[in-house]
Amino acid sequence: MPAIVSEWLNILLRWTHIIAAIMWVGDSFLFMWMDRHLEKPSRPRDGDVTGELWMVHSGGFYEVVKRRTLSVGEIPERLHWFKWQAYTTWLSGIALLAVVYWFGGAVYLVDHSVSPLSAAQAVGLSAASLVAGWLLYDALWMSSLARRPGVAVAVSLLLLAGVAVGFTHAFSGRGAFLMTGAFLATIMAANVWRRIIPAQKQMMAATRAGKAADATLGARAKSRSTHNHYLTFPVVFCMLSNHFPSMYGHSQPAAVLLLFMTFGITFKYWMNFRGRTPQWILAAGVLSLLGLVGLTAPRPAGAVAGAGSVTTAVDYETARRVMERRCFTCHSLHPTNPSFPEPPSGVRFDEPERMVALAERIRVRAVETKTMPLGNLTGMTDEERDTLAAWIAAGAPGR
Image 1 (cartoon, rainbow, N blue to C red):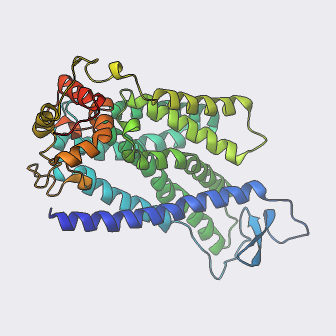
Image 2 (tube, one colour):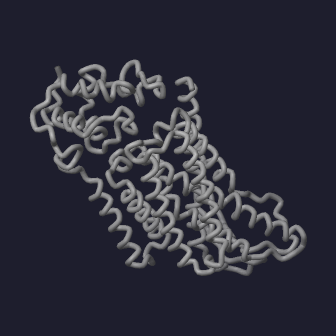
């Protein structure tokens, strides 16, 4: 794919994806907030009213009245549906997944130091897992187990933990984090498409037919909407994680994923029920965050790469030879890696001044987190990583 075409696809898809996601997540937060702040009707109201709410915003006052169902035959002249935000977010996200992670040899998805999957196998597993994830989740919550929500939630979380661990053993660290987010986002979007909107349409169809709508349909739709609500923080973290190699490049990426998902879900619960959050949930959230901070804290120099096998000072020329063999294929003025017609993110090391100036980035990516070279395509060894570490420890001298 020509570089300019890839760049424009990335720009437009990311722009669309971010805006749609803001709208979808914002809707989720707003409606959950309104449900929590509904009060008993201040005066007699027509219909199956469950509560009312007054709000002030943008110079005006809004009166919100929530009904569980509509009266028989009552059809609003204009009814606003909230679905396209979800669909647009998912469709643009899948397009981005294809452009960035599936096309171009799946260079961001495959890491042969993690698993022997070929690019085609990795892409196939990636796509199949999204479909399988929704089918398994939906089957669980459509089964009799859903009548015991506490048990169903526990089973769901255990399955999610298993999926996250499995992804970290199949894909690159970056790919595993992104796939966990895509896995959850697919479930969320399918909830809207297959369960929430159809339930609301069935209720409207009954109203049009002059029949009483089944309120249990709305209750089940609300349950799926609540699931989506609690998954928003973990999904957003997974989608942003590719900017943070200390997270996806950690030697225990599954632990990082699970700790943050625990924190994200418990923090959202605390936001929803401030002042009423059980102490054990609050403690779980705080401990998971502290555990994550401790886990990703910088490690001593001897604890990374090859445990400090290079103990003598390393000069620029020695470090450059390592970089030339392992890094210049992508990060040079004219990359030889066909997947990158331009140096990724504009990062180049083929000039002494650039290599010295970016020594700290080299330390983080090549020495500490080992997230570069990408998927270790060029086969950088631990001894070579130690060589770079020794050069940096000596002050990253130039030639």
